[in-house]
Length: 76
Image (cartoon, rainbow, N blue to C red; front, side, top):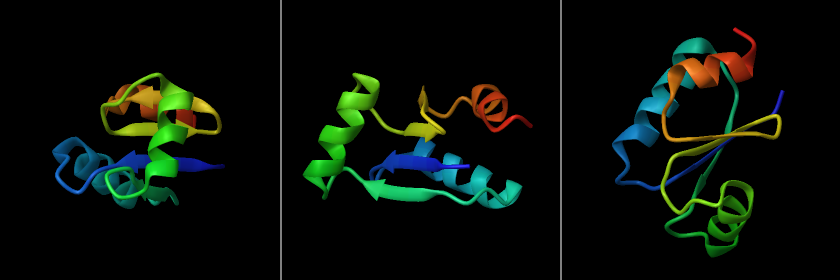
């Protein structure tokens, strides 16, 4: 399973997503789109959105911290 979190340091919903992944034991890769322009452009291509968090679960894009949607994507 591949989980990617596009976030910024000041985003409270990004921290909620990280806490959720840690609590559930989900491995994920995190990119700070505030400091990594390439990853910000990648996030925009995938989601069409500039807001964070953007979560990619095996190619399924979730914008914002939507726990129910994340759980469905993780098949939990």
